[in-house]
Amino acid sequence: AQQVTGTVEFDVAGEDEDVMESSFAFWGSTAIDIPPHSQFTTPVLFQKAMADTKGFAVTTHQHQLGTNMKIWKADGTNVSDDKLLIESTDWAEPPLKMLDPPELFDVGEGLAYQCAWDNTTDSQVGFGEGFGDEMCFLWMYYYPSNGFDLCMHFNAGSQTGVCNHLTR
Image (cartoon, rainbow, N blue to C red):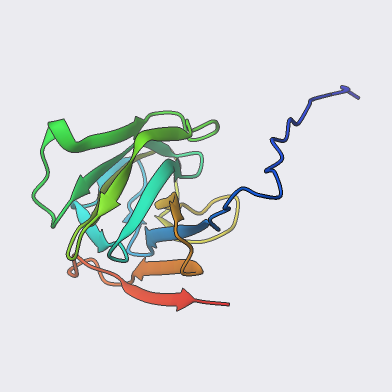
């Protein structure tokens, strides 16, 4: 067995310091249907952020057939490279991109994202939590907290998702 060690470092806020609670958004698509021995790329999908929040970090999530995921700050599905926040080609160890300064979301603004896969298997691959399934999700850490923000695209023809804002 391999022994792995690590460290965690905490910065403690002083009693007189104001602390702002943060939370995270988990947005993605279940509209994944990849034929055997083929490549598939989603359309650019868009999800509005909660207005007057600031995103301070983003990352991507795909399974083993994932080859690329991009996230842009946007106000719809028309995206430009100058608004690209992160591009990941490593499904196993996607980077966590710290947004410095944080991205402020005005009314109607949010994140656009796109996923690509290369299905090298003999099976049709769809959305799921299992070993042979795929995912297309982004995490965004934001403040001030309005609770966990879960948004899903269920339909390949829809460019925006259905959300459930889980507040305290």
